[in-house]
Length: 114
Image 1 (cartoon, rainbow, N blue to C red):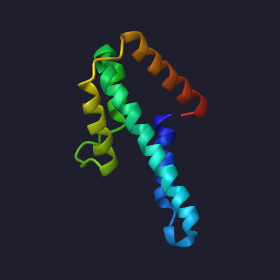
Image 2: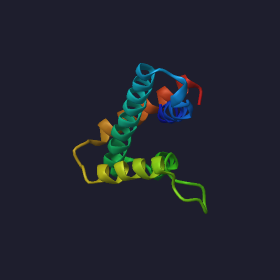
Image 3: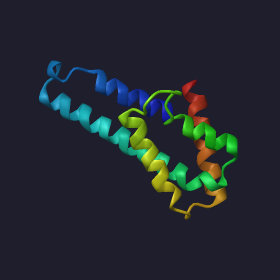
Image 4: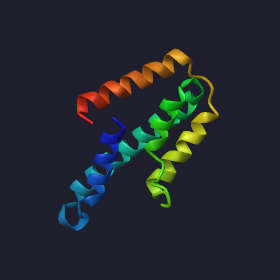
C-alpha cells in the first residue's frame, strides 16, 4: 500500500501540467494531495505504533523514508519521516491495533504484488 501511494504520487508529478486542461490539472493535484495525505496518516500511525513493533518491523517501515547511504533524503522522504516522528509522540494506539495495521498493510502489499 505504501509503495502504491509512492507510485501514484510519482506518476502524478511526472505528468507535465501544460499538456492537460485546467480541470485535469486540478484533478491530478487533488489526487496527488489525497495520496500524500494518506501517506502522512499511515506513517503517523506507524510512528505511534513503533513501541509495539519488532525491530524488524521498525526497520521495514523506516526503509520507506530512509535514503540510501550517502544520499540526502528527498523532500518526500523528509516529509514522511517528520510524520513518523510526530506519530511517535502519540501513545493512543494499542498493540493489537498496531499489529492489525501491519497485517492490513502486508495484505495490501501482497495483493499489489510487491
